[in-house]
Structure formats: C-alpha cells, structure tokens
Length: 320
Figure 1 (cartoon, helix red, strand yellow):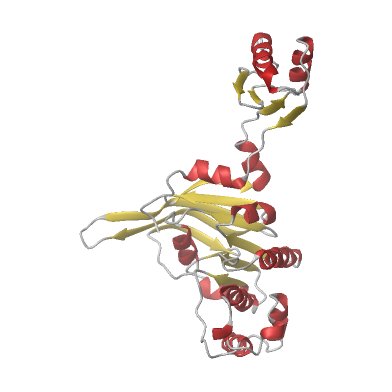
Figure 2 (cartoon, helix red, strand yellow):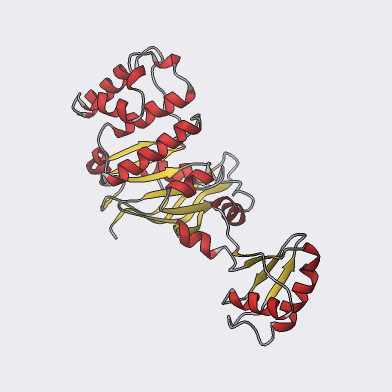
C-alpha cells in the first residue's frame, strides 16, 4: 500500500539552562498507509505532540527523515500544506466571532471556496449553531469547530490531536462516523486520543510511542494478537473441580499438546488459564478423559488499553 506519511529516525532534543539534555524523540519511526484511520498513541510526555509539531514544521528536528504525501518535509511543506488538515493541541478562536464568521475568514485566508463553509459545518453537526458566537460554545462544540476548520481544504491527510475532547458519548459516536465517512471518501486520518476503547473501535492500525521511541505498530488486530499470549480460558460447571482439572491437564501435557511450547496452567478462583496448547480440543478431550466437562473454552483476548499500559510502562517521563 502507498504510504501517505513516513517518519524515520526522528530525533529532537532540548537543552536546559543548566546544560542538561532531554530526548523528546529518540530515533522515532512511523508509517501510515493511505485509506486508513491510524491511531497515534502515547502517554503524556511520550513525544507524541512533539512528533506532530515537527511533522507540520512547527518544531525543527535535530535529525531524521519525514515524508508527507510523497514529499520530504519540512523542505517541501509549502507544497503539501494545502493537502493536509491538522489540529494539534487545542486551537484558539476569537470568542466574539460566530462559527460561520470564523470559518469564512479561514477559508478566505486559505483560498477555499466560501461554499465549503456550510458544508463543513453540516459535517461536524454545527449547522444549527453556525450563527452563535464561539464564546457560547461548550468545549465539545469548540472541538467540532476545530475539526471543521481542518476539513475546509478537503485534505488528503487529516491529523487530529484529541478530537473527542469534551464530547459526550453521542458526540464521540458521531465523530467516529465522520472519520469513517472521510476515509470512505479518500481521506487518510491520523488520530491521536487517550480514549483507547474508541481507538480500538475506529482505527485500522496504530503506532504506540513511549520515551520518544516507537514501541509497537501495525494493524490493530495484529497488535492485539501479538500480546494475547495465545492462552485459553477454561471454566467448569463447578469451581471445586478446578484443582482436578489443573492436575489432569498438567499430567497429560508431556509430551505436550502439539504446539512445541510447554503447556502451563494458571488457576484462578473461577477458571483456568492454559497456555501452550495448539488445538483447543486437546483440552476438552483431556478433561473428558478425567470425567471433567468444560462449560466454557475461549481464547484469552486483550484490549488496546492493556497492551498500551504493558508497552508504555511508566509513560516515558522526561519527553514532551
């Protein structure tokens, strides 16, 4: 697939007045394929915002290579600016202007047709409040206005930093639908958010950053599968049978269940976790031979939040 965004070996350091050095980005790599919603995740202080600001020419990198829509940046940033829409951190608007006036000024400054203004207001659900002053808007409505401003240019690449900030559940769902509609129309979306459950729902792929380095990247399903451990959750009708079930599986494990890895069993109050089994039916047959019967046999699954916490550890303190 074609990459719309590529970052390789990106480095950014900051020197303190006392001569110390902080590595905000330490050889960071990232690749975003066209036609996707790509989640860009990292704890506070991981280097996520620094990456976006560097990519958009707001911060100068110390080293590394960046390409946006096939062009090297920041050298060719003026050529791709009209093809990229972005919100980084919380944008500020004139409080006494209406949403319509705000977007009209931005459209005029960017050479965008004025007809685009009502179109984007409709897209983000602000058409009914377009004539109200921004100072009367809630935080969620201001976020919608920020997204509308990023959509004015009908960008090929849309970069959104925390677009769901301040939105209620209905607004988050509407934002999810909007992202999907944009991808269907040919826009690639890079989405940064702390709402990891939402990222798991909407994103095709993710990049996770910690301490200025990439810790994992790839399709969401593959990232989750890589950290599931390949375990099986086993329940029996009576929890009192769990010790016997553990003993039966452990005794039958040598020479193994065909996976090539040792079979291990962890007993919990109401279930067993069995690892190293290639074929789930081996567990069923083994327990049935011991006159024990399974009420539940399911693969152990993980969510993006648990993977995120596992990979990022202390959150990368020291980066920005």
